[in-house]
Image (cartoon, rainbow, N blue to C red; front, side):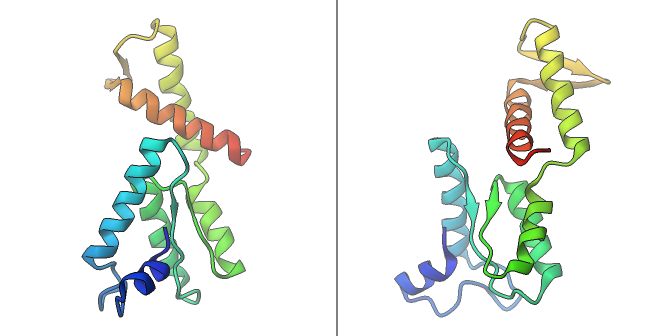
Length: 141
């Protein structure tokens, strides 16, 4: 999705409020992008962060986008690429945890629920773990 493109298309003077957060219309578009991409089983790519000099805010926005389900983010400046890669590449810890979930389900004959270290994991956790492992593999992690 493109926040700047949407602004132009609907005549909005700004996509963000005075605190730098998206306004309701733009949060809705962002949410619908994630939901539509999930339903279509395609990558959800977040829009650009126009202030390429504010790397701290950019990193925060990247981490929030990854948390929310985006699998990548568009860049408007080459300096943003390493931050994007760091935010959207699964950590070794996340890969290890996801692999443990997948392995536990496989070892138990793929039941509805498994327990690992006193925590219960069900099929949605398995699906999330599989998706994270696929992202890790695609990134070469």
